[in-house]
Amino acid sequence: MPRVRISTPIPAEVPFCLVRDHDKPVSHAFEEPYEFGLQDNKGEIVAGTRDRMGRFAFDFSLKVKPTADGRPAFTGRFASGTPDDRFVYLSWRSIPRGVYINRLKARLSSIDWETIAAALDGDRRVCADTTDWQLGDSRRNVPWRVV
Image 1 (cartoon, helix red, strand yellow):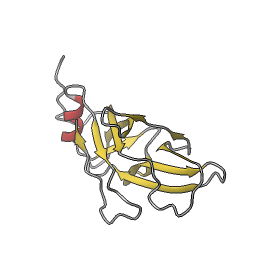
Image 2: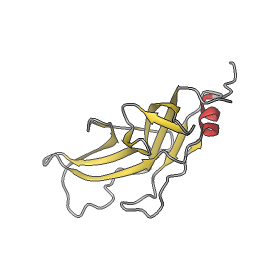
Image 3: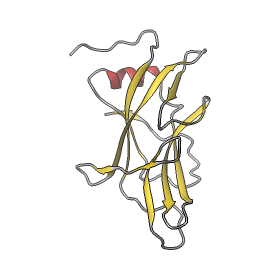
């Protein structure tokens, strides 16, 4: 398989994954049925699958192209936020009430072209584990890594 080299940023489709070891809402004081998953930019919640370690796994892809100043700009079904603050959502929505219980942002701004090239080189993904992230977490960016 040919190796991908990105010396000049190019538009590409980048594979991603988010994982979380449980589906419990991060701040839910009462019991009611809910749906949990990766939220698209139209509000649909897409359920994950269980990975080999039993965690919830969400596989998706985002398009990327360079901004005017050369940084990666992500777009696609699961990209939310403004061009300067893109993120993907893990969401918990009440089934009977149809309202969000919680939404957890996984910001994309820490992902650079080197990380993107590493994922595209060798058929790998850019992934983050959100298991220990809580609502209102003081950390700004989840740690993304290539797996």
